Length: 217
Image 1 (cartoon, rainbow, N blue to C red):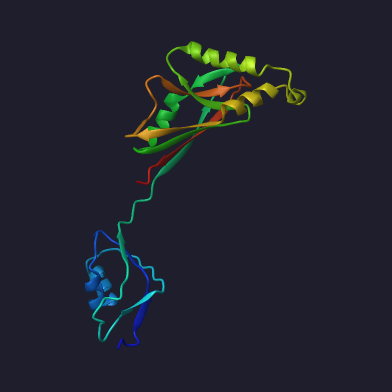
Image 2 (cartoon, rainbow, N blue to C red; image 1 turned 90 degrees about the horizontal axis):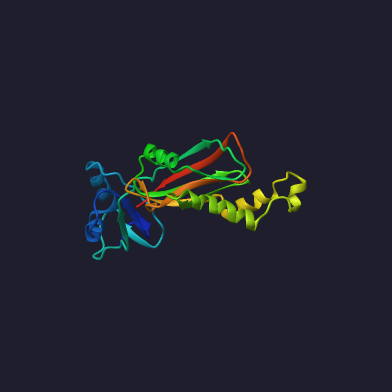
């Protein structure tokens, strides 16, 4: 017969450096004694108990272990993150500004090797685009295309600010891009760069928020 000193548990989760535990040993030696042994070995552990089965803490021990499940896992290091705002000045009403080097500088400062890089343009008349970095005519083509698709001076919002087209262009392109970070380097191809898209310049202080999140794995 099992004594009164019984601990009801479903799962015993122990965060430690080992990878496996013997359920027979745990049941026969008793949970308290087992955890004391872990403490003596200076192993950090945490415990979570939920009712399901019983494990005797003293006196006679049942022939069969009563511990139904044990999960042993390494406590992972918390992933790092970093966020920094890039400030830039634009000199035309509509232009694409290459900000790849500024973003790369933030990546290097973070020290993060694996993860993602998010680049977000603050402002309702600005956007971010990944585009051709070698032939500048591609950037001009982007501006010309958007001018043809969304001409200036024909929109309801023009009665307020005269920049209805800028809002629509920014919305069409989108405010952000996400780039994978691989071995400390952004996963852009040879011909790709990150561009800040100005649709309502010139502006003296445009802002781009660069956020880097480390891969939890």
